[in-house]
Image 1: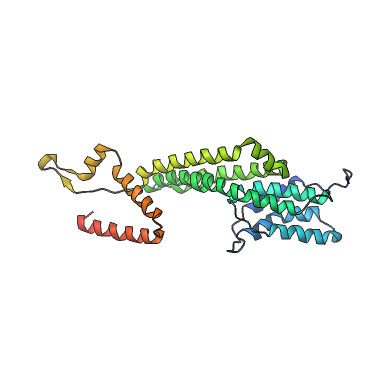
Image 2: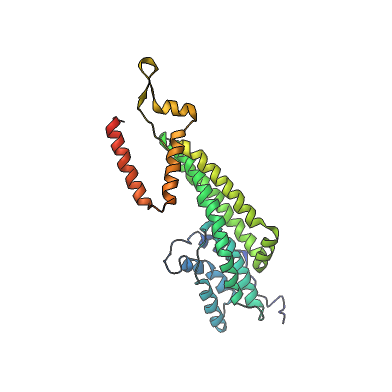
Length: 276
């Protein structure tokens, strides 16, 4: 069964812009049962209203809104990609009586996990660390550019990703999974994002971890702090050792709060002993 072009229900740029704006509020309503589901359904409400505007469509409108209330957990900056796919499938569902509405949630559920994995490593795990690393360097020097650069470096790419992922998702629609699987792009993005993230974290170790050992080694004019000799073996060897020890402790399932409190106590004790 086909429909004439005049009777086809079609989303416009207005609805897509509303999705984009509402996607920025994905984490404003969050619970432990279904996490981001309320804000996700809210973002797609303009789509549902556009596709089912009449009173006789009320039952379909309710079903569409309920589909949006299913469990949702995704990186907010990549949520427009999933919303775009969701919107395209809702549009197809409204126009094609033979379309299986259950496939909408099936596609959403199957994409949610991989997109969250890629998004978390790419945006909070890489972009935010880069932005914070640059900003901290300026802020530590008392430069007002610190917080400004953080906001710019993090948000400009994040909003670009939001905008184009929405258009990309809507254009691909329900065929997204098949096309993305054939291209292998998900594995590539995840792999390279992991490499960049590790490089950034490695570079930050020597910049963001400070620990000097003032114990003097040698005598007379040749006496130097222990840190000096360790740096001759390998620059920032102490910082690397501290990082490695913390990583090892985390691997032993020690609570983060326990590590932080212990670190505060140890640092205060060492400062008192050595008069740092």
